[in-house]
Image (cartoon, rainbow, N blue to C red):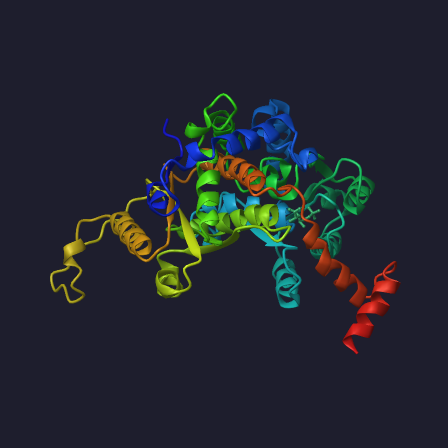
Length: 448
Ligand code: PA5
């Protein structure tokens, strides 16, 4: 079985050869902090050994709840934001047939996401849409108090209760939250919803392999055992027994930090498969929240190629030389599509006749990498054998491990997110939330 591969040769021309060797002691130190729990944020490293510690009973419980939800709902709304949203969306979008949501007689429910914004049109249109549909809700919040999903859930719960009996509502709502704390836990226990627990020692952005990701992914019809299997194998491949020179998470973390130390402050994650758009969004949160603090951090951005070569390509090729790119390249497409020959050849495309679309995509990728490195954009390439559950599991754990290591290389606490509170405090003050009276006065005085 092939595994994820990393190629840093096009970064070494910028950041120097033997990057991993030159950072060997820093990498060993970061690995020790993660595996022995001696670093900052060590109460949130439950994800490090998570794949190998998920039990058969936990997987079966999730599969059974998913089966029950699938039997009652044609549409399932997954309510959550940030780390309680992006992982599930990344995997579900990455595995779904691009047009499956348009098909009427589906074998899987349509997965819809809500609570990840507070757009009134989005919310109202969702409620209108669901009015005459058979639907269920998976509400996910570790704190159980996050405003965006709480608003969405209040509205969806109201609609479910209007449409169905209380007993039916219980079958159509699953809550994923803290084992004891928070408003969602209290509500779920009171209403008798099926619940799953988010472990205390796993933060939101590292939680996709807990019920936060596994419940929606299983409901969508994907094999969570394969997903966990891929993550387990990557846990082993990036474990302490593997020398740091062969540990691909160490190689990635070291290379991006070496490039950063040479002055590049922005990393763009590049895909050549539209299905990976939300994987990039997940990666942005993972690295952005983990590293952007104490005045430090590599800014994580994302582009979908070749689409964005026609919008962002100019900037990347010739704008401020502050960026480097990491390409997630899928080796083998799941489907086959060959470009036909055309007798008239008015579009002059016959030179491509007989080639698979992916061959053109791969040459676009190679041509772009050469152009970008010529233009001063260092490149890291991560090759994924195929888009399936198993390799999503590998990718998730690979990037999580690299993120933990990279955070320690940057000398930050990769597992907190104190800056996320600033906007919430102002929003609550402006909305005159009880308990925020002083903050309300202060913010109103500033706005006079
Ligand atoms: O990574 C994080 O901690 C955040 O993005 C949270 O996941 C996000 O704010 C959602 O929080 P909660 O699950 O408590 O509703």
